[in-house]
Length: 98
Image: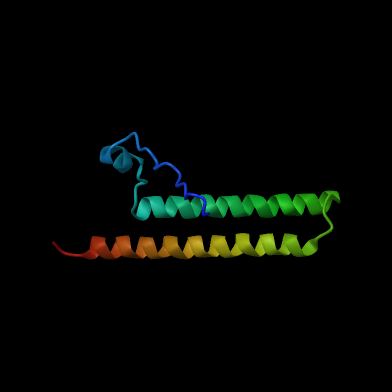
């Protein structure tokens, strides 16, 4: 004989649609750039930490240090390029005649 199939209870939502809208993160160029800046800062700190560990002898893996440094370098380069594009777009908008 087959055992009965037991489904888990349905999730209960306490808030209405307005709660979901309030929790939604803002979108746009400012929040995008802030996220990129935070990510770049995090990668730079990781690279610094990896270099410090290697210098103190707590780590022997030079490959991980180099990878962390390259990630930080690429993140910083990308951040600068995005900033340059945003400045160019702003300047182009300011040149438009109304």
